[in-house]
Image (cartoon, rainbow, N blue to C red; front, side, top):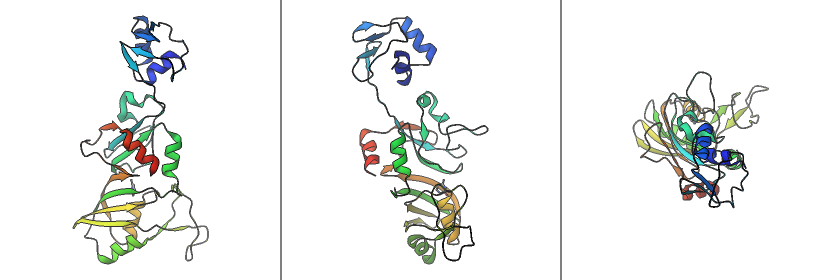
Length: 251
Ligand code: URA
């Protein structure tokens, strides 16, 4: 890979800052000062230093974001701020959100450039856990709780991320989903912890509606073994630890 690309992928600076650093002789390759931005290096075996600090190339990066409300889970949007723009300069490397949270949903969102891991985590076959703290309109009745625990029928909508299947009682051409059994923990009169294993469009809101309740606020606190870092304020993010990345691979 080109040396200037290597340096900008490691967030040494913008392209012009990288060029300037090279001109100033701040970069060495295998112990020798290198000023040529187009020099080709082997990112895994060549030893590159910036201001005497050794740089280690990582192909993939993983960030945990505490998504604030009002931001869309996309890489680009014409009108609203996106989760990727919250990463600032760390967003340099083809980073995208793994799945989507609604604009008004807050909490744990994983961002990465690892397409294969993302694909696995979102695969409908894998049933990766998603844990939501849900503020509800009225206290959950026993019947509503049982409904969520046993699974409810929800109508397929065009934005669904998974495929639907026809169900007795559905109109021709319409599809109904019976959600997988969810785990429900009552936190207070108006708050529950809901663990689901699918990721369909507006799933939690639609599940609560299906049992006769309503979501007033939604925060994701867990995803595939990851737990939202309570030290992250809305809009803040951090890199995942190695252990957290491992836990995602095992999810
Ligand atoms: N379910 C929803 O309804 N919305 C989300 O953002 C995530 C899950």
